Length: 194
Image (cartoon, rainbow, N blue to C red; front, side):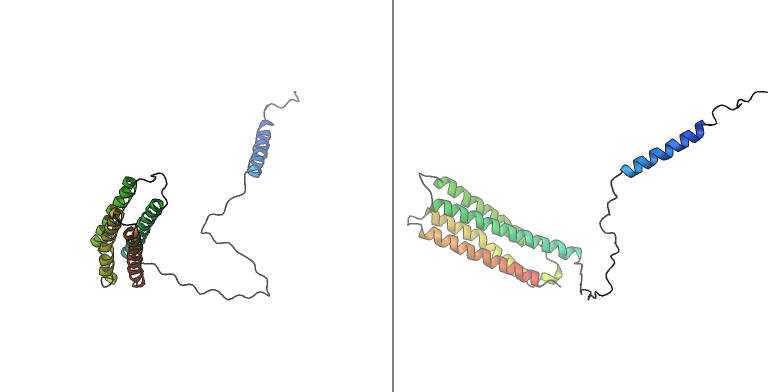
């Protein structure tokens, strides 16, 4: 009778299982810690002697049409400010020109581009259909926006005027006032938000 085990390989299965467990342990411990996704809640343990009053927060969600309209209002204000800044920068460059830089043609081109932008802004404001909550105040914004292209035209006339630049300076100052008045009407629109 032979003392050898007739089933060779009985020892392979336990070795494979031990190796799988060992590799799994190594790979799991080598992983970086898990990140907590945003929006999940975490538990914070506070000391027993600390008392706090919860803050009163109110959240309101605007209807989609009002939110979209107010976004347009913000865009109109940003555009008006950009036009006014471009005019002011071109005017300042013209005041401080040296050796013909910037040229009259370049300054005129900047002012003419501002006229186109102001007219586009005015047209967009006039074409905007506000939600019902703003129908009483939106006409003031339309009226104020309509003055902006005319204000830039006055700046161009001032640039072309044969004086010492006073007409142009006055027109630039007047345009800043027109921009401020237009933005004030947009503030009134925002104030009318239900």
